[in-house]
Length: 504
Image (cartoon, rainbow, N blue to C red; front, side, top):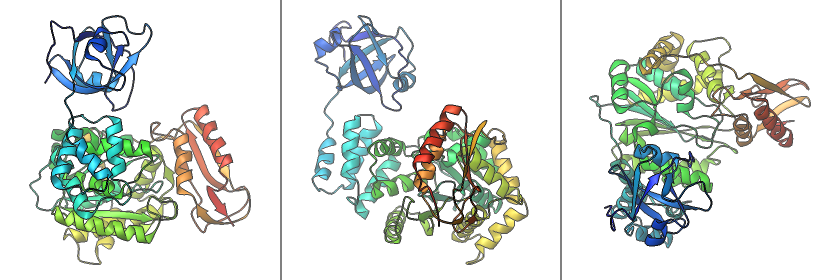
């Protein structure tokens, strides 16, 4: 609750500084500000703020200098927009009450069990914005590695679902799919969704934007059409086309997941338990009942060993079954990129070439998409066992998948053709031989240095799959960028990373 100490002594006037802190809520005050002095606020203090009767919790940053005048305060852009604040508004401050769920975090740090009640308390407080980045980092670290058992992952998943929005559908079978990631390209989702919807399945696909990769499904779909859809718009598209491919972050399905992913990325900490909770919480929140999980395995993929993949498979089944989901987990080849494009527009071109049955369409992307779509058709009862992949391939070859995909795009806001970035550079083979190894992580990094995914047309057009025979001077891949600076930056990185593609 926000309370005034006396006649607005804990209030200031807002001035907009335009500081971007991503999702973190930050408030700025002068060091000698009367509010800081009277309340005893210090840098990094978490405090309650109120603007026009809307409240939030923010971290204090103290300013020395004249960027703020006496009697003024400011907010980071994320909280400014959240509060619908305007310059000149009054902002009122008060102390944040103790966060009791931090004792649950400390217990987990020292080897305690995260039961449902503890998970519920933690996730609720995170959803309400009570945790600072330090608190979030402590929780992510406490759960990292193999510190969560099946019951703890289930408790975490259920709690994450309960604090967000939920979708409900009339159909008793609602299909979905997810890939744990780690491969450049591999943009199967738009193709799988189009095939599934053309086969009569309801498939409300909510996808993420890129976190550590050159493109997420939502980034690629944003090349074609609108993806930032409201819940009402998603329902409208589903009612019309039985499918959508929307950005999940815009509809707050399992919103705590986005917070935890941000912290995990900053720490470069991988938690298999939180990854499973992330995936399944969004599936449950989206109203899905039947889900295919794709786990690519390769030396430079996210999952590097078959042993790790089998463990993840067991966890997915155990947690999914406890949540009432019908799952099928498939383990696929993760040793090289899928398709040719790496980056939103270049991956979009691959998707179109497959759906349009163009002669140069990447066969590996077509085959993988039809394999996954076929498994989904079988799981949902729309194909007999062993017949799903063949049916999926026929849906593509007859043009039904392309027609459905185009209709989905039009329902979401229209259809756009992808374009190449204006600046490019070709990377050539320096010797004769056979492509024997590809470092997926370094290739993805090169695409990101080109500007992907923020620059939609930036990235890499790949032309050197495993076991391909090449001659000196042959094209291995072409890099695309929106500016010469980004192009040169990527070229320099590639020159210094000689093991992106190994030729023997």
